[in-house]
Image (cartoon, rainbow over all chains, first blue to last red; front, side, top):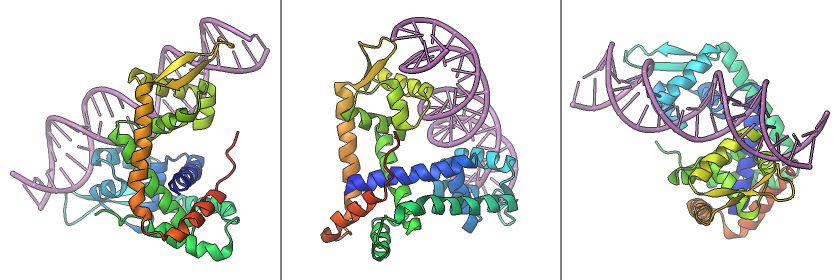
Amino acid sequence: MIDALVRSAFDVIGVVSAVAAAHELSLTQLRLMAILRDHEPTMSELADYLGLDRSSVTGLVDRAAQRGLLTRVPHGEDRRSVRVALTVDGRVIAARGEAEIAGALAPRLTVVPTADRRHLADLLDSTLQPPPR
Amino acid sequence: MIDALVRSAFDVIGVVSAVAAAHELSLTQLRLMAILRDHEPTMSELADYLGLDRSSVTGLVDRAAQRGLLTRVPHGEDRRSVRVALTVDGRVIAARGEAEIAGALAPRLTVVPTADRRHLADLLDSTLQPPPR
DNA sequence: TATTGTTATACTCTATAACTATA
DNA sequence: TATAGTTATAGAGTATAACAATA
């Protein structure tokens, strides 16, 4: 059971990494962009989401910004702070990445009987820890 | 369904990475040691298993060997080739790591009804691609 | 004083290209 | 010639420590 969960995890992460690599992105860069699809976080919030030190996020954001995938937006209220947002280009690539991940994983799910899918998804979700804040 | 699979994968990999980090190992180093529990591969075979370039494996093995976790063993037949094997220390740490991963994931599985576990494991395994050779 | 973000620095991980030794 | 492994090199990713600007 635990073995199956771990094997599946490595398998899925492998697929996601391959999709990222196809866009010359690291797994972390793709995660970063996925987060930015729904949020416009500060650097510190981003560090919390990703579980990284703030100084690491500086580099990640630098490299992605240099490629035109995202931008730093002045915060306004707190002048120490910046918000990070996808550019139009970044949004296109993020959407494409998500679609490719779905496309790559879909064939594996054809072996799961349709009747089982909802159940499997629920079981998997129930095993997730509540995200730490 | 796909979302649940991906979320679960990141969650599980996070747990495995944390266990690795607790032993000051990277995810790859821990994977390497897990492979060596059951195999005594050549450097090239290791590169295939891990999906890395041979030159990357040289560095991984160097660092782990320097910590006394594994050793290069002369192959005998083909004098170009070496085999990689865990040391006694390495075997202890690999076993401990596996136990800690199981221990860290077990609490999450308590929410899965006992009757569903076999079924969930089978479903997850059925989604795995046959490993590329 | 505390927080936000960056910089300086160092190490791991990874790949590409070139090399040595052996086959 | 081909294969096994290493070395040289370069860049990404990461953390720690120290810093400047702002709160």
